[in-house]
Image 1 (cartoon, helix red, strand yellow):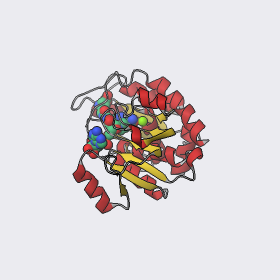
Image 2: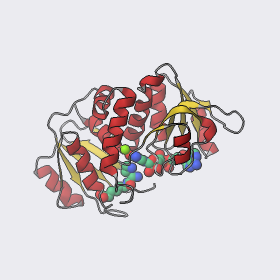
Image 3: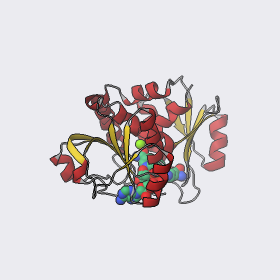
Length: 262
Ligand code: NAD
Ligand code: 2YG
Ligand code: MG
């Protein structure tokens, strides 16, 4: 898995605020309002503990701080434990934490200690970035959506689109993965070389740049993408007046928290 770097998180606070503004413009829901709608949950003064984890490649500078910013920005009560790992877990629980946020190199989870619910970042990130497109008010009647990247984030996004009755077109550089997806889900293959098609709604979750080609775009397309780095060039954004929802950590984190709330 591609790991976040402190550079990815350098502008995270501004990006979260700016993306919340854009999501509200596109959907008429603020980010927390959209989470409330799709999960049917609300925060109830839970105390959220963020535990830094040293396993594997270790602490990522600004990771815990970015989670704390997200929690507090949306009016919730959070703290970063002074200790890391197991000692941090003990500190969190003995200090009354209701929800634990912690990540190693393989999994970033939210665990609600009161109701037992657990959430995984990849699933919740795919889901919220997909729901943003499903709720795009300008394109409520256009059901076609392109999904680029069919991995651990893209697959739950695809499932969300199908649940929301969208027509899903899929692309991945790994043709075996495309074949698996075509076998398992009622989706269409997107093949820009043989059959170009353009979309108002594009979801992207790959670790590569420039995955979104010009022929996939329409004037005023919306790209909703957790992928790092960004999959669309500045030139194409400008040329097609594309609105891009993209932020490295906070949107997915809020989605995880609403997934484990009551
Ligand atoms: P993954 O490795 O499980 O899946 C990535 C998929 O993209 C693979 O199927 C791969 O074959 C495909 N791919 C790679 N290059 C491609 C290309 N050029 N064109 C089309 N498909 C291509 O990874 P993942 O866990 O699904 O994560 C995807 C991206 O999302 C990563 O960049 C990850 O860092 C990022 N991510 C961001 C957030 C966030 O909050 N912004 C959260 C989780 C993951
Ligand atoms: O506690 C810490 O500082 C570290 N142990 C956190 C490690 C997180 C590793 N995971 C990633 O970098 C991501 N691919 C998942 C994070 C979700 C948002 N992109
Ligand atoms: Mg995010």
